[in-house]
Length: 385
Ligand code: SF4
Ligand SMILES: [Zn+2]
Image 1 (tube, helix red, strand yellow):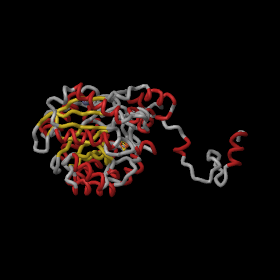
Image 2: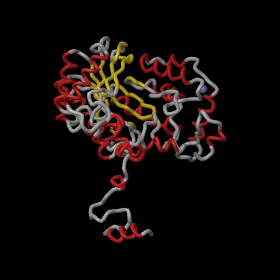
Image 3: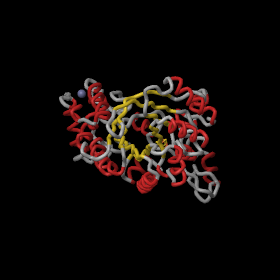
Image 4: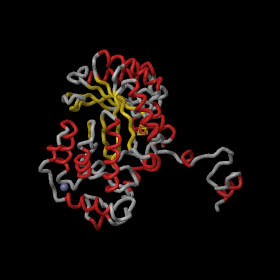
């Protein structure tokens, strides 16, 4: 053992594991390893952004609860980020790339103004999605006066508001405060999986299905709408298992939610999932899996939305490269129309490869799945990365 390590080990009582410091308080490995968001380069990049500038604003078609098609504006703010990320963080979440530690009320109001300037005051939009890379109504993340200003203004203007939150933060006090300022506002919770084992070991979500159920009860008690996000293909799960489980989860959470939105995994910078992906131990889902999932759950009550971010790209849900554009467009259309006819006549040679992968994932005990890179010759993708 090198001298420096042996000295450390001698000093480190009661645990003599070498890496542990001498304090009697337990220290997790998490505290000793520099997370990617805290490397000097990452901090420098974050701090270089203008805090008055939004992450992004864009409009998309949207379907209202009564089936009317309208337009939605999504505003993604640069905030202080998610409290759960400050402590730990979900395995797939790269939102920390968009945050800075010193964002103030004035910065957030300037960002709101910038969203209005860029969209001609939300012209043509009936729905506003206010996303903060964390929980909108968490006071440690966002100043309460700013939360109040957004809730009030959107309510006064008759805009349907969608905000995001973690389950344990939907407390009765806070939800009644939100409902008072914007009755009927939609709260979207990233549940990811209706399975505590997956939440803990695959997602590192930091809350349980029990806490999600409690949050839903609280939202209902305050007549707020419930939107539930599920994650298609968490890490350490094969394509076949992901398809099977996600169908079960939609069937379970659908009746408890007003809307279910399935997010197919996309690889975000600096995440655990990115590390697996680089080691060829993880591939984003097939677009065919999403089509099959939609076909199988079409009869579940409540609206189902599937938005594959970076669809067709190697870091998003993708197929062989030839059919991606058509399959992704059909999925997007289904999310607005809810009509299975969107998939009529859709086919490609790669569908057989996908079907074989799903079948083998169900019969060969391979936890990461049997799938290979879909855009590389098979012999090359079998070589070590
Ligand atoms: S709770 Fe949401 S914002 Fe926070 S780390 Fe997880 S996915 Fe990211
Ligand atoms: Zn194809």
